Image (cartoon, rainbow, N blue to C red; front, side, top):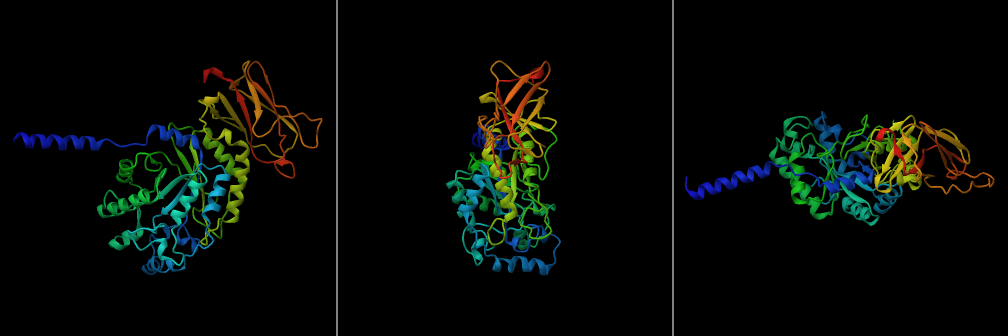
Length: 436
């Protein structure tokens, strides 16, 4: 072997060694993601017209069903009531920091103006670039832009003559080279034509090659599913290190379900957000727009209930981390902002808390200091409307082994003066028992 051949071999060996190193999310971007805390997931595709599960009805479907799905549904998809600014305005009000949109679900239908396939939003009676309009509006209202993208493309597989399925080898980009190249072209389109993209959520069993592809062309994109834990419809039993994200539906289905749906209450959703943040995760709360582009009223109502609660209490949700060893005590959950030396106590499970009435709580793991201060988020602690003799000052008493806090729900948020959702207490300059 001559010197030139040896040198070439060494270069190839070095390239292989470097290529084996896995590119990861930047540590600083992971921290920013953990600070955000709350995002909105949007599941929407052409089969929202049917009120069916998104995409999955194609698996095991007859040839007739598949033909009608791919060839007839695009002809009737006409979301003429879609208003990107109205969506973004509501998401912002709800306290979300980022929005993840289904640019392409498993069915392969692209919600953007793509050159890779005719199976896209531009070839419908609507004929407008929904992804482009939405991303522009999200940025307008200061929201981070997130892309949901399925590498498992049923339309592409069908065109290959491959059985539509999810767990078979040919449905995975690691086994189907043609599918991987197709997906790369689409991901490159989204990043190049609709950027800057802040986050990408890859929904497939095998995502590694696309994750590495994204990191290689834009290292400032955070990959969520594909690189971090993203439990679906569940909340972990305890805190997990590093960034993670629970995604969850308001009802039982990701996409719009006009019939036979059962929704979680606004209080349930708020309490899930609290639990997830106390355990160190982000909450990606899903909505499923109607086929005409409107957000269903049941979902809007819940977003607005979250909006009111977050308008008062988002300080305890954003830019916080778990309190080591003290996630929960009874009905109380905890987060902390280390930069402000502040601990937030979420008082959940409080029924019929009438305006101006006081309740006391015992904290077993927190100890006051000479510098400790206490307040209730959102209220001044100075006055109760129509009850001037009632002074709603927040108080605390340090007993030998426990800290007792005394709280009045003084702010009037509903006409009936009864507040059903968690109250958040802020404590500064406290110590944790046993040094935790």
